[in-house]
Length: 170
Image (cartoon, rainbow, N blue to C red; front, side, top):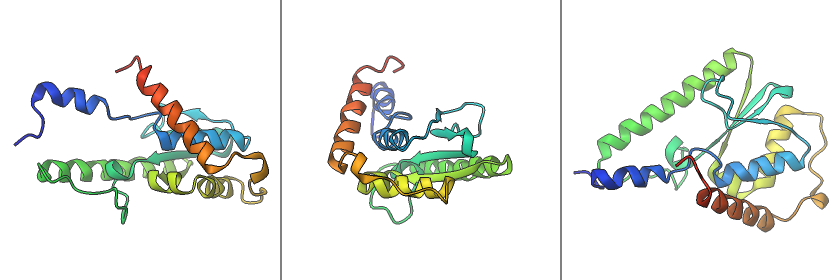
């Protein structure tokens, strides 16, 4: 039994964001504040990474815990209906993620995967992780020049809402 009639299914699935998600906006904002410049979703790379740092040969995926199955995360639940469909969908997502990461590594890219729950729980620790991965000898973030966590999350939320209401591609 389908949970949505066909005419509603398209509308519901269309509301799911594939880019400019709240966690992605948080990461991009903090990377920019840390002085890093990057490209977004390069289509010529496997998996179209969310953030590409060509200077450091590094790509960053900001994965949603539900869709990409973050192990041990309370958000990575299994829907109650159509479990066979969802199980196959999730397995295909995870397999595709592994394949894309392998292909990127074989092409010489460093791959960093950030999870939605980690970004929202502690955005500064998440950015520290990225900075240490790409510039091991770099100093840590200067927290005096950064806004507090609440301000970062609020700004990303308002930008995310603005993107939803002004999205011309939907």
